[in-house]
Every structure is written in C-alpha cells, then in structure tokens.
Length: 604
Image (cartoon, rainbow, N blue to C red; front, side, top):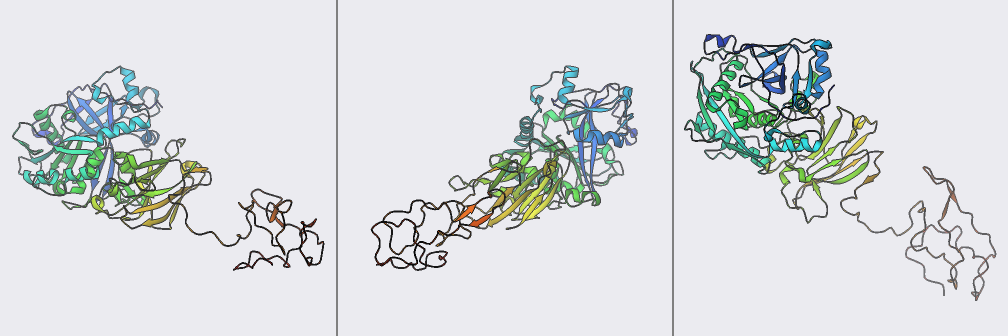
C-alpha cells in the first residue's frame, strides 16, 4: 500500500463519448463513457431513506468541464476490506485500469490482485508527486499530520459560507412543496423565524460558522434561493437523473465549477420521482439533496450540512442487527432527523463537536494509559460562560486517545450533555455524562457507549488494544448555576502514574485520636509517654512508630513492639531528681490506645 499524505489537485477524465442529451434519451441514459485516464476522487455519500441509511462509495469525475459524482459498482469484497480504512472522503483517489460509466454509475472491472489490472487508492500528495500538478493555492492544504487535518477541518467548519438553495419546477408540473419565500425563511430566517439553518449553525458554533445566502445582481436569486425551471418531465423518473439535469442547468447559469462559486448548494427535488429518499449529502463536499417536504426539516438541513463538513452518523446499539442503529444517537443532530420545521434545538455529540473544533479552547486530550485526571465538565451551552475566576478549570469535551494506538483504534469522547439554551432540545441522555466512541475512519458512525449519572462508572476494557482497562467515573453532578452546572469526572487506569490534583481540597477536622492501625511513620510531633510526673528531659530515643515494619512492600507484616523490661513494681514515693536509668512502667496495664477524653489532670 502507498504512503498516505494528501494534497488537493484538479484532474480531468478523457472520454470517448459524453453528451448531456436534451432529448427523450435522457430518461434512459444521460452519460455513456469509456475512460482512458482512469482516476477519480472518492466521496462517501450518506443517504437517508425511510428504511434506513446507506453509505455509498462514489467517485467525482470531471468530463469536459462537467463535475459529477456517480456511485461505484464492481469492486470486490476483498478489495473493499483491504482499502476501506484508507479512504478519506474528498481526499483519496481511485486508480484503476478499466472503467465504464453507464446510467450514472461507474462500473469498475475489478481484477484485484492481477498485476496488469490493479485497482488501488492513493492519497492526494502521492498523486501530486506522481503527475507533478500545480494548482490553486486555496486548495493546497497538506494533511500529513493531526494538526494539518485540524486546519483543513476548520476551513470547512469556520468562516462565512456562501449558500444557495434551489427551488425546482419541472415541465410536467412537479414542484418543490415550498414557495421561494418559505425557503428563504426556513433556511435563512428572511421572515424572522427564530430557528432556521443559518441561526442553528451560528448558535452551535458561537458565530464561528456563518451560513450566508448567496447574492448577486441576478434577480432570479432571492435571499439565497434560486428558482429553477427544468424544461423536461420528472414524474416517475429516477431521482439521480433529475439531480443531474438540475446540476447541468446550474452549471450553465453559474459556470462549470460550482464548488468554487458556492460553499454549499442545497437542492429541493419535488415529490413524484422514482427511488424516493429523505435526503443525502456527500462528505467533505458542497452538494446536498432533499426530497419533497424534507427540504423544510431543520434537523435534515443541519444533518446534511454536517456531512458536507466531514461528519458521519451518530449511532447507538447493535449496528450489525439494527438498520436504524447507525444513526440512533439522539444526543445531537447527526442521529435521527425530525419533520419539525423549526426544531429541535440541539447541536452535535462529543466526537462531532470535537471534529468541528468550535469548543477547542475548552477541550482536552488525555492519554489514560499514563495520566490520571479529575476535573469538571460543562455543557456546550455553557461554553461561553466566564469561568476564569473559578477555582478549577472547566472542560467541554475530553478525548481519550493513545498516541501510539495501532491503525483502526478507537478514541473515546466524554461530555456533559446539559439540556439548556442552544441544546435545550436534546432528546437523549440530557444532564448526564455521555461516553461515545469513534473509530479513526471518518466515514464510520460514532457509537454511544454509556450515559452516566452521579456515582456511576463505565469501564473500557482493552483500551486502544493495550490490554489495559480504563475507568470513567462520575463523582457527582452539581445542579446549581454558580456559575454553571457541571459534572465532576475522574479518568483512571492501572498503568497511569501521573495526574492532576482534585479540583477542591478535601475538607474536615482532624481526628482526636490516632488512626487504627497507627501510621507507618512518626507523627509531626511525637506524643509524650504518660509518667507519674513529667521527666526532667525527654527519653533518650523516641520509638519511630508503634509497630515494626519488617516486610515493607506490596504487603505489610505488622508485629507489635516488645514492652520494655520492668525495673520496679511502682513509682517512688517522691520523684527522683533525675530520670531513671530505664523508663518507668506505664501507669496502666496495658496502656490505653489513646488519651482519655477529657484529658486527666497532671499529677501533683
């Protein structure tokens, strides 16, 4: 397998035939091509349907200036198993020897393992070195390490995003079931709606990501919504043909490379097409598509934009035996979608929030194999609360991750799902500590592992394939706004040797008597042994401790010290002028374990 560094480049396919037909033939076949330079950029398509979700490996082709993403067919199961973990949506290329494009599908004539017809994946930096391409500096973002991956993610999830919504009307009368004015309000709040795509992304990101309606001098675009009239029928036509025709019309209007003009394009396809769906979006891309009334669903809008930003689904339960489980995590909006037009008010779960980078100043990376940690977690809705004068530092998300973890290892994210403010509509695990896992492959769904209340723990066995168990414990949950609710959380493992102090010193008063058993070292100020009358000076040597420690180590062998030999049966009638040669017997037989309470009066 090749090395995996990355650099974005532009590529062209050369086709023997590709015609965007404007005749009846478009219903049967829009594109037919045999590619001679067989490489394309891979994308994951996340498609939501009434029966579950689909993750479709697709490829973007550039044929004579037309950008299209078509699903891949023909790759063997063995090839997928070997390569799937190396595929990063929008950052990996497929190179193969034989490819056909028919009916909007790329057919790979896979001969995996055959040296003369090898199909393989290569990252962008390797491909750039192979063909020596130089391209627009805007796209030259290296991805060799975690820091550069973070910078690329932030370029997607932060800043102003030029966004256009497309209202579609076809020749046979099918039409997006919302007016242009309604779409302006649903997506951008043009008529004053408090909850819309623009406001939701702005609130969850604390203004770091700004969805802005695309505007220009064209009167056909109103507050970011473009009304498109297709000169062809769409009833009982496959939806991918309608989408392709829509993209062709947009390219004629706005230029061939839509991805350079827009950050996001959201197409609202009318009801009545074949292959009905809810919505789909391409990971790390600019295109999302909605079917019928789902175009008005706020959660569907945010969910599909989330895929554009690089997010995968948020799941819960047994993925192998449950069609809905890969997006059943209702903590955030990468789980289920809801038909509500203006809700629910929620953001994203721990792994997704970490990936977006919106709360990075209060996130913390921990290697639990070496570090013991205890501290306070607050909800993302309290991220902007001023806590700088507090005794302890507050965190929003913890990521438990080992820098030496093997490929395909799983990271764990710990967050406090506070049901409040911008996250008031969260539907699962509210006001609890949520533990969520995420494999290193970005197309894999995150998995909710546990919901913890006060005094509950969750153990991660064999953390990062190390053979060591890591324990997450919720010590308490403070439910007072002074200044915020928080969860007191501990992270520990048997191999961890360093850590942070507890957030608040322990409180209490000292005990009135020695503990049992006595401490293994002398007290700060040794107690004086009781005598009939205080001695003129201290004894020659105080005992170091009331017990001997012959076998200090993992276990202790405690043996009582032998009593000193007796020298007289009772104290003298008058105190001696100087100490006796040996200590007098203790006044009681045997000595009391602690002074009486209250203390006895000193002897006369």
